[in-house]
Image (cartoon, rainbow, N blue to C red; front, side, top):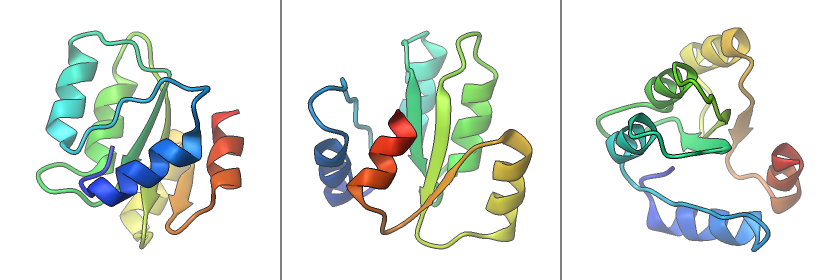
Length: 107
C-alpha cells in the first residue's frame, strides 16, 4: 500500500513471484478491502498518505478477526510512528530499504 506507482512497482519486484501481491494506491480502498473480509496475510503500508495514515490503516487491520501481519514503511520516522509501532509490535521499514530486508520480514 503506497500512493506512489513507482514504489508499488519496486515492491512487487522485491517481493517476488512466490507471493500473491495486491497493490493499492488508496488507503481507503485498502481499508474497504479489509472490511469486506478479503484474506490478507501481510499488509505493508506507507506511513504518510493522503486522507489516511499507515497508522490509521494498521489500526483498522488490527480490529479484524483474521489480523494480517503488519509493517509500515516511511522515509522519515516520527515520534508518533515510533510510539505506535512499539505499542503494536509492528516493524518499521525506513525507505530506502533493500530486497533482503523486505524478504526477511515476509519470512
